[in-house]
Amino acid sequence: MDAEELASLVLAAADGEADAWEMLVEHFSLATAGRAPRTPEEPEPRNDGTLEPEDGQGDEREELWRELGAVLAEADPLPSEAVEVGRDSFTWRTIDVELAELAHDSSESDPRIAVARASRSPRLLTFEAPGLTVELEVTAVGTRRRLIGQLVPPRRGLVTVRYHQGKSAAIEADDFGRFRAEDLPAGLCSLRCHLAGADEDEFVVTDWVTL
Image 1 (cartoon, helix red, strand yellow):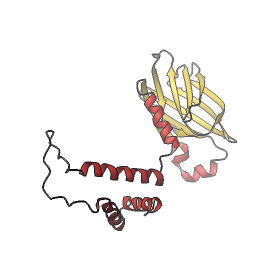
Image 2: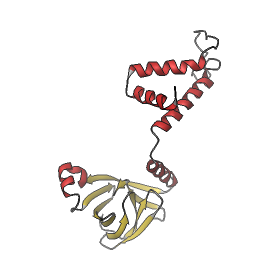
Image 3: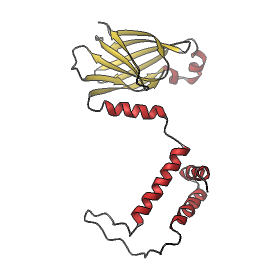
Image 4: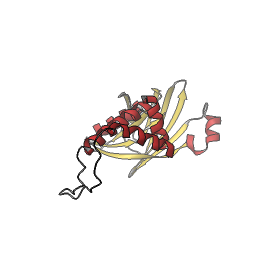
């Protein structure tokens, strides 16, 4: 059985197809063919209360899991954008960051209206965190994006538009909490807000969204 066939079986088994599970069991059982049969004796418990695997069984299981992992990685690889977002989140793990979660997206409120107005109406986004709301208006200008934003309550600050590729654009929010950016690239991004008067490493960051 080649890698493509094995990948199809794994995906089918994940969908709950019993025949696929049986074929997988049969396939991986071949890896142990010719070995001496194991006795059905119950494994001895370890000091921590878990069961000690039978002789050679632990290595065998690890080998099978590695093979399954390789097949799944080939059949359904993790999107590069997700990897970059994860790396970015890990980089900022030691910073005092508060998450502003997506509370409203006009493009998802009514799909019929979203489709009808996509070419002419701005997209409205609202992100909420304790003590701060970030309101955003996104307008498509060809393949680029225009952002008009508002911090509520009004605060001065520095708003940085971060992209998953590592690029960023910094925008000043005025005394009324207003900020604006022109000619930004489309794509997956997040806003990082450093409010006036906040500590140097204190930020509010929004959920990642695709603009």
